[in-house]
Image (tube, rainbow, N blue to C red; front, side, top):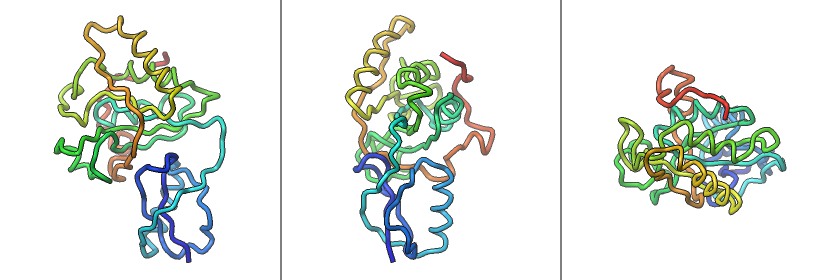
Length: 223
């Protein structure tokens, strides 16, 4: 019998539990942000016992696939928007940028964990560039609002870019500086190195698609 805890691309990312009883699970070439894989995981979890074990996942190599992490207010609308961007292959909403390990939505909403509601994006760099995603990010929310977006107030709704590589940091800083003149107020978007990203509860994944609610950002348009 083999037990696994799935991790995201980064070794330090939030841990998900994996079921016992999967004899063939010697390696896990599964992307956590693949909805189909997650559904298979949920089925296995329902049918199996659970053991918490730490292990690094072997991820299927794909040189054109990259990740981006943004925070731009309520993550329902952010996910709905980026799911419409050509070249974006998968998205997950979750929590990052804080100090509490594996927080719940309710804990994040107390403004005591330091986490932002965020989106983890997997995109094909041959189809859409990180720079284009950044332009979409600055278009789809108001980056001049500090610790809020519209009626949603608190540090969990802050504007932030969590860069995965130094190259992403450099592009983010350049795009932010280049767009400043287009806004009346000062852009307050944080640019921070990515740390642990904790997947939000299933209820919040694809929330707008499931309920028709939560599309509180601007409509998608090409940039």
